[in-house]
Image (cartoon, rainbow, N blue to C red; front, side):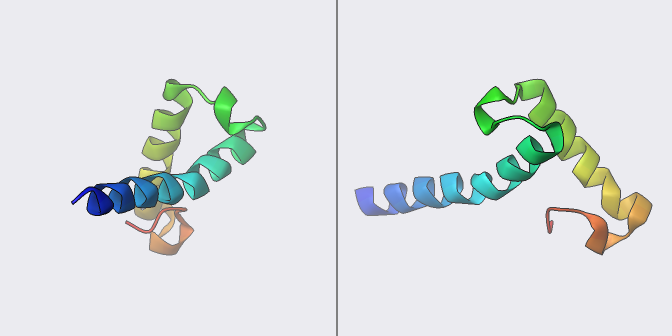
Amino acid sequence: MMRGKENFFTNLVVGSLLPLRQMAAEAERAIKQLTVKQVVAWFVKDGKIPTEHGVDAAFLDL
C-alpha cells in the first residue's frame, strides 16, 4: 500500500513544479523565494484568464 502513497506524493510534487516555475519566472525570483500570498494570487489570476481572455490563454488547463 505504501507504493500508492509514494506515487501520489511524487505525482503531486512533479505536477506542482511546472506552475511553480511559471510563478517564479513571472515574479523574477527563485521558487523558494515565492510567498504564499504570491502563489495564491497567481492561481487566482490564472483562474480568471479563461473568463476574460478565452480558455487557451490560461496557463493551467482546468
